[in-house]
Length: 126
Image (cartoon, rainbow, N blue to C red; front, side, top):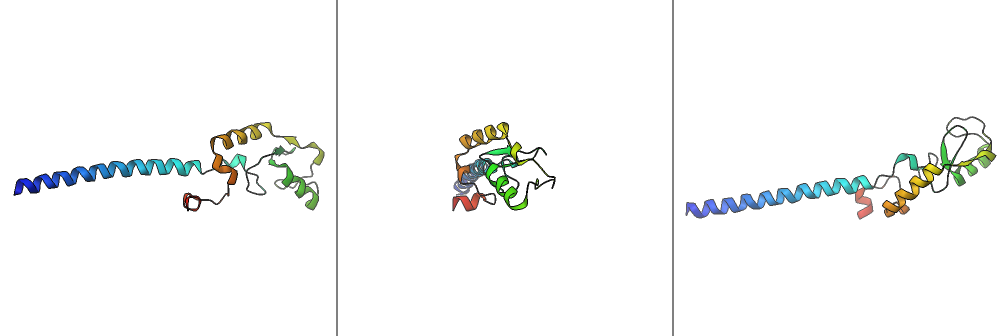
């Protein structure tokens, strides 16, 4: 009888070890997936918190989404929203590095086409 109890105890221990290994794998996968839900801050427009598709850099060195900064200029005048310095609205330069980084990021992370900066793993999966 004690031999049967010992065998059952060993089987239970073996099953618990397998479950623990699966839990470790699930935790690792979850961490990797959660990381992928993060859009790098340098790809986000500081005005809208949206992914920049047409990034332009001002003389100040700050980069914004083109349509957003043009709207800002029409409402607030030609003032950089970060530095509050007057800028030449005619000298918007496409930020090719950010544009290319955004394109690469979108290719690698197609979910980000629907990006909302406050998404969590739970809100996206539900």
